[in-house]
Length: 150
Image (cartoon, rainbow, N blue to C red; front, side, top):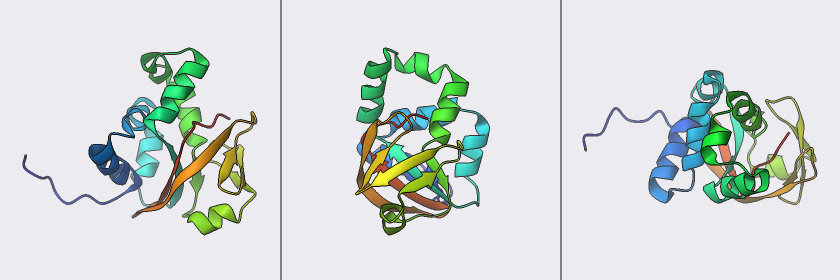
């Protein structure tokens, strides 16, 4: 295949490259495409963001928990947008910033609570941070093993 222009290495580019290698973020990428275009625009832009990126296994668990198919979830634009925004914080927060914070305000407006590398959502559900400090030109990605819900 002919390579396109060099990637700008935004959060979206990095997630797509990681998915191309591991296949672990295909649902996250589909969710980004299904959400309000403003989310993709922000994560592809110049602002600085921190993304807590759930793996496909995390999304699979969520679908089981909610009794939904991926198509049903991705078909609900408002829900997908709200959930994605709950996984994004403004600013470039590396793992030491995250670990030293007890709560993190999300783009969705709510908070994630953090203790010892474990995020707790508004519903008391927990997600472990399983990979950290994946750098992008416009922020950083930390991988989590569960989808958090606002």
